[in-house]
Length: 338
Image (cartoon, rainbow, N blue to C red; front, side):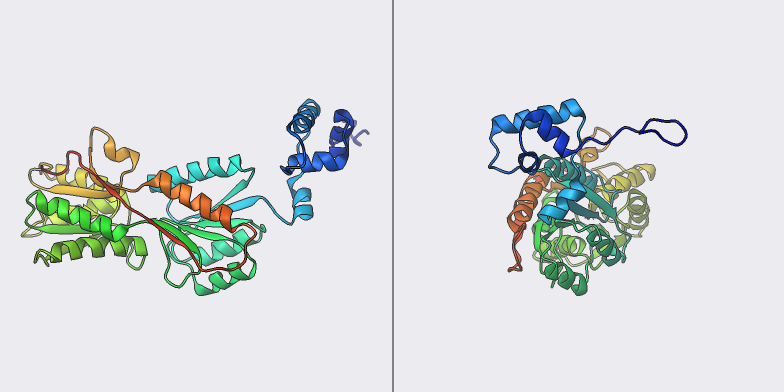
């Protein structure tokens, strides 16, 4: 066939061509690419070899019409600026690709999570992994009606009927309080993120309750926007108080790194003048300029649990939601005494 301008068009290779080349039926080719267990490994390899020699690429859209599955898993990321979520996204992508799934990533601005989920559902996704902070009850109903499995990663949302996997943030906050108190802190400050999110609120609650158990109720608070810049500005604000804290708990590591740099810019020694504890244990926390004491989230186990729940839910109907709550671990470095 020749294009009107004289360019020759190459006919697209089809599954029928692969079947003929491999000496099998077209149905067998289809089963091989769908991972059907009825195809022997020897036959599968013969088909794959034929496909490679012909430069054949399966039509996943056509296959989805047959199987009623898109093989797409959507991931809604609320904060790509946080290296914790960037690392999680990379690992989720690798795991899903190993299962033959395509990954669709959306980033949602605060308050626009429902809009993002509606857009994701337009792609007839087989599952959703959500790290965003707020999802409405309406979205709960939409996903349940469509029998789409949803797993919340690193958070839970009260009233949202979906599985969830997250670190025990309240216990982690208490561990931070115990660590700073044991190191001799006398005045405490917290740099927090977005109020109303379970991750932030549980960490803050665990920290303040941990101090309250020892009769300590005076804790200075400053909003750090969940960013490095926000952590820097919040630390400046707290450390300029008439009676500044000698210990800061930052709800995440990104804000803690900003707080460290702010304290140093003010001429303060860490940990001599002010101790700092973060939460997450992102890779940057261990770097020599920071060596941040932090609460490590078990990210590998959290991803394992999320993938396990997602695979368990494929093809299932509505059920009681499952929560997997994992324990954080103190990683003591150079920003605390003792």
